[in-house]
Structure formats: C-alpha cells, structure tokens
Amino acid sequence: MWRYLKSAFLVSVDVPSLGRVPVNVLGALAFGILGFAQPAFWLVGLALEAAVVPALAFNPRFQKIVEARSLEISQGDADQKRAALVKLLEASAQQRLWALAKKCSQVLDVYRTQQAEDYIVDSNDQALKNLEWVYLKLLVARHHLLTPTSETEQSLEKKIEELDHELQGGEESETLRQSKIATLSILKKRLATMRKKQQTLEEIESDLTRVDNQVDLILENATVQGKPKTISADIELSSDLLGGSVFGDDESAIQELEQTYSQQKPRAPKEAVGGEAGNRNA
Image (cartoon, rainbow, N blue to C red; front, side, top):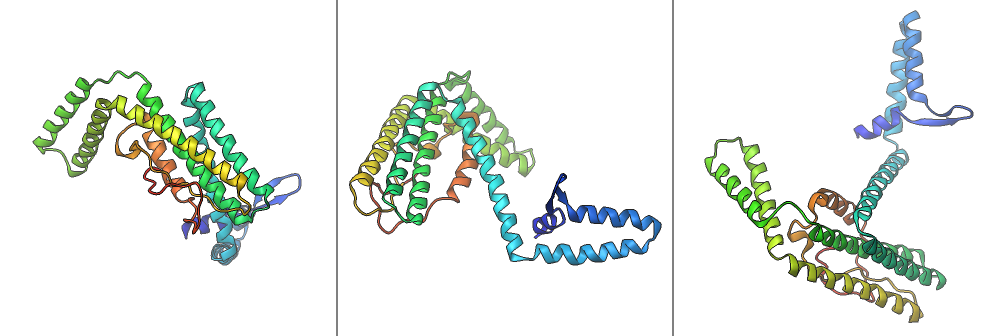
C-alpha cells in the first residue's frame, strides 16, 4: 500500500511548456510557503492532502496504472541484463542466437498471416521467448566453460578444505556460518562442474541442437497446419544448467532473469504441437 500512497503523492500531469508537473508536491509546497504568512494554510493543505492522496491511492484503476508502470520498469531492467549477457558472447554464438530469434519471428508471422486469434499469438510469442531464453542460458554456460580462468581443481579443493576447517571451528555467528555454508556449496558445485567440463560442453551442444530442431519443427508445423494452434516451449535438456555453477560471475543475473521470466510464462495449453514433455531448465 505504501507504494500506492507514494505514487499518489508524486502523481504528475502534463502541462504545456512545462512538461510533467507533480501537482500534489507543488500543492504541498505552496501551502507550506503560505503557512509562514498564515499558519492556517498548513492545516488546510494537510487536510487536502490527507483527503486527496488516500482517495487516489485506494482507487483500483490508479493501482492498476501503478502496477503496470512497475512492470514496465522491471521489464526494462530485465532487457538490459539480457542484452549484457548477449554482449559477452563471442560473435559466432550471437549469430546462432539471432538465427534462432529470426525463426521464432517467422513462426509468429505465419500465425498472423493465418489470422490466428490474439490469445494464440500472444501465448505462442511467450512460448518462443522462453525457448530463446533457454538457448541464451546454454550459450552463456558454454561461454563460461570455454573461458580460461585462474581457478584450477587444486585451488578450489584448497578453498573447500579451508572453509571446511573454518566451519568445524564453530566460533563465528550463525549468520556468518550460514553464509560460509552457502559459499562452500557453490565451491563444491564449481569443482564438480570443472571435473566434468568436457561432458557438460557436449551436453550443452546437444541441447543447443535440440532447441534448434524444436523451433524448426514448430515453424514447419505452423506452415502446414490449417488451423492455428498454441505451441509448447517444453523441452527436456541433457545438461542440468541449474544443478551446477556454470554461469560464473553472471550467476546472479541469470537467477534474477529466471524469476522475471517465470512470472511471464504462458499457461499450459490444452493442445500443443512441436513440444517435448518435462522441461527442467526453461
């Protein structure tokens, strides 16, 4: 509720030659200045703000506007983080991602040409975006696995041993202890990933090919089918992207985007084409 009250107090209107003007803020400021000449103005201003701001904040329509703006900001932040992930990829990987995105766009063009209903186009658009997100995660994971680092199995083993020793001491606070336990878990995952690096790279390449084939199948089905249908973004991957620390310094960005995109996933369609059951990583 606080964000609605704050938004109501800061609400702005367009004024010619002045742009957007925060009317409540200016009103409060005006009554504050007038109050120095006549203190009664302070009471009048306080009474007006106490009536106007809550009334606006509790208005369902205004609340929807605030939520919509918040979603736009969240999506804008997600787009920036996603663009940063794409930028770190080598040119060949970016080209693979753009090629996949182009095919996804072609799928939507086919459905629009078939005059599919809006809900079908929107649902398929989101399903294809989810597939693109899986593809990007695979490319980012591969990038970090192929990028040389100063870490070795020996150095990670030493860090794990030192952290284990510190935890056995048991002299730190519970908060610090939990932090060290979480760090130890990440180090062990990184060590496990490093030990099976080549296997993971092969699994990732297989998954990239699988997503490519999935989208090709979706495009072919969209072209030959007479009646537009919703599609499925479900695909079972060989690599377990969330089971190990394969994203390096981009781990937190991936997790944040994962949360954002999980809230935007379409409802499971009753009838889907070109899909595979059991998505573990989308």
